[in-house]
Amino acid sequence: MEMQYGMYQEIMDQPISLRRTIESERRHLEDISEQFSKLDKIFLIGCGSSISTCYTIKDAIKSISSIDIDVQTGYEFVEHQYLEDNSNMGMIVTSQSGETSDTLEALRKAKEYGLKTVSITNMADSSMAKEADEAVITLCEEEKAILGTKTYITQLFSLYVLFFNMVKTERAEKILEELYKVPELIESLLGSTEEDCKKLAETNKDVDLFYCMGGGVNFGLAYKLAMTMFMEGSLKHACPVYAGEFRHGLIERVEKGVTVVFLKSGEYDQVTLRAIKFCKDLEVNNIIFDLKDYSEIDPLLTPFALIVPLEWFIYHLSIYNGEDPGSTRHIGKIRY
Image 1 (tube, rainbow, N blue to C red):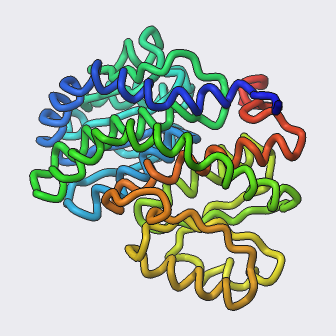
Image 2 (image 1 turned 90 degrees about the vertical axis):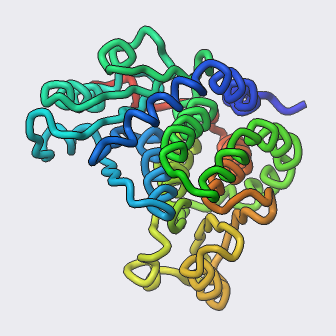
């Protein structure tokens, strides 16, 4: 019997974590949504998996609304963002621990200038939860895997509830209906995708560098896949790439033997489709995670369908390379 590492149970905990968070925070998120819908601009701040959720919701919302969202790291906001007192703006900080130093500094700067502030964190007694005007708590219990599984999915879910409630259109309402069925989708994918992704991991265990490509709503997940899943989780070199920027840089590097992981929303993203065809013609090692293989949900919800197979892929890729999935070498051990 194959050994199960700690990350395994955290992957399996995602449906119950979502259900707990929905039950506890749904009305709270809807109330915050009503407040923030009156703002002129909203800053989303995070790092690692947390900033990837910010990228995702920004790209999802800009597809169907004109809400002004600006995604930044904490350091960028603190050092480079001009603010005026009492502007009609707000900030949402995202952090698993609620103690991420640069994100916390950004929150404190926002409060100095009178911005409305919300924290989304897994720790109710954290600094961010205490200092923000409103605190949304994701009920995931402890999470040890550095790449983020159940905290990622509940954080992303919370942002979707908050922002899609601001968009009063028929499509937004339909997406919200589908969103609340995500726990059942995750539960189904946990059981149906592991074996195929384990085989995929075995096939690609000797790959040294993975380019991770996504367009629109999928770029945030491509960023997470490269930055926290491949590099932190399985200690593989990886690079996130906007699908729209494939023709700059990467187009000169793809060739037989190069590996590109594509995140695809069916036939929704034409730029990604063109990149896939170009790479196939060159016999590139294309690894394609396609929404249509996992669900029929709205393409703007694609990350909720792709995250589980990606987690299984990374989990088993780590094991095939002799690594404990989700463990760290440096993060949390040194002051950066």
